[in-house]
Amino acid sequence: MSFLRIYLRVLDLLAPEARLAGTLALANIALAVAQFVEPLLFGHIIDGLSGALPGDPWAAARVLAPLIGAWVGFGLFIIVAAALVAWFADRLAHRRRNLVLADFFEHVLQLPLAYHAGAHSGRQLKVMLTGTDTLWWLWVSFFREHFAAFVFICVLLPATLFLNWRLALPLLVLCVAFSALTLLVMHKADAMQRAVEQHYSDLAETASDALGNVALVQSFARVELEVSLMRGLVNSLLRAQMPVLSWWAVAAVLTRTATTLTLLVILVVGTYLKLTGLASVGQIVSFMSIAALLIARLEQAVSFANRLFTDAPKLSDFFGVLDTVPAVRDRPDALDPGRVRGLR
Image 1 (cartoon, rainbow, N blue to C red):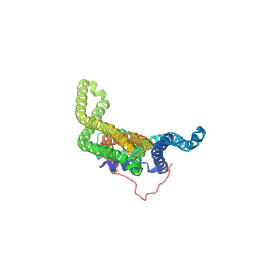
Image 2: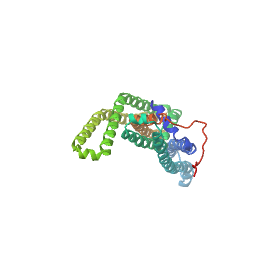
Image 3: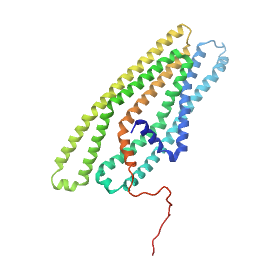
Image 4: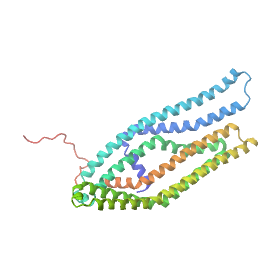
């Protein structure tokens, strides 16, 4: 199952509360726009302070007051809107997680005995708990961080080309570098991460067998043997996990280097453009602020890609169980008989 298909299915589970989810999405768009406008206003304030102002302090204040008021207003809006989005997103994610967990449990109980004969109960428990935990995290992070980040990167960043394309080019190059590096790491580590998830399933099955039959384990003096088996599985898991962590560590170092170089390039190019009359001090300040915001958003996007990549096998297993057809199920046009009582 592809990453895009997995993510779309994750969002599709929010359909019963589509109105609240849509409202949160619109709030994220408004947040992204406000976060983009705020540094632009600050740049205009810097230009106003460095330009020709009236000698009278009150007259100068009246000139700058609209810009400062708008900047403060956008800042307050960002604080309040972010708090409200976090408040409702947390409640939406917790509510949907518990309901999806109950639906998953009901679905598994309705699967045929032939399915359960070949599916270990410990693995089913692990799939249910890790799958719903992953869904909860994705829903919370989508509405609290990632949707606004993607709007900022994909929609608002190209708008900087109309402000000053010379200062915007380093930002676009940074985005391309982040995207290429993330795709490279995901491609290299894909098969390795799926092997890691299989090790986690083996751990769940072994622990479930031992704990579910603890009386037999102790009676036959197999405690040491079971512990030795578990330690061997843990060591195998670590050997499989370390190469994946190494790839993401390399990505983190390279992306941090790219962001530092981008800020340096904007400063150098901005200084040259100021000296040649192609940019103002306010524009340089605005683009430095936008670059800082962009770096934070890109790091959020990479962190999200890392987490989704890591959790993709868990979600694939989760949706794989949900896609299994029960032996007995209602017809699409079945009628609800309501509460039925037998003869007395």
